[in-house]
Length: 284
Image 1: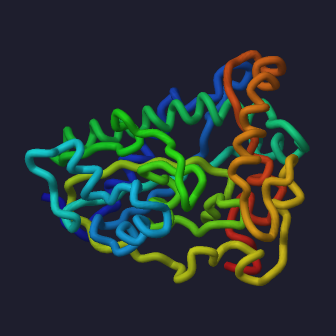
Image 2: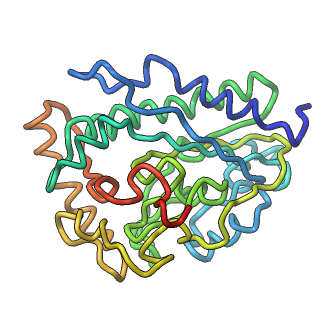
Image 3: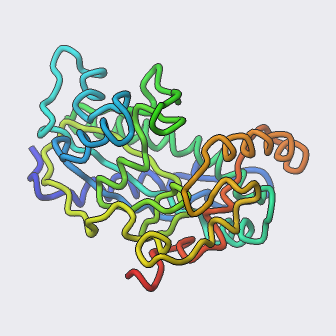
């Protein structure tokens, strides 16, 4: 059994798996879709996971509920579960390209959204496999059959496992005005997670407030993401998910016509902002 305080091997596992040649843009770009991941770990009995039932909605699984789906005859107790979350940073080239756009996504960004996210799913599968081979029951909630977005009275759209909220609980970042997660690698990221029956210490979060890294909330000024949104889906009041979703859907024919593959993306609010590639300097 692993020492509960020795979690460095878990980070090494995720980082090692991320270096696969399948971490790729494909098409005209012979380069990785993602930079080196950041990894955070929390214990399944962290109070935030229960709080998400209230703040996200009752449909959001706790780690114990998710693990019970995969191991119904021997479900682990919440304190026996490791919640392993990772941040996949967009590359500097992808961020630069998307920063120059005003309405639709750059090709690199669209490719990372589709092909890079496909690799993220593969990374989850391989992390689960590696953990099981090491002797630990494991699963990935977002890959569980039946997982998907649902209508939510509180959040408009929600899922039973929000990767952003999981990463926040694991100490990896806080929320911005546009609802994106601002991390030490910035807001131009994708997220993933797996669960394992594995003893780990409680998470140590370097923040007390869920908006700590957002200039708008922390200092009362910024609004860069408001200016970046091409359809006015972000305002000082927050993020209009319906407008955002409608614009994402409208990018599908553009991605096909311009870049030659089926997909959708935007990410303009994740680039060209002080939080694009890190925590804003004024808040470090």
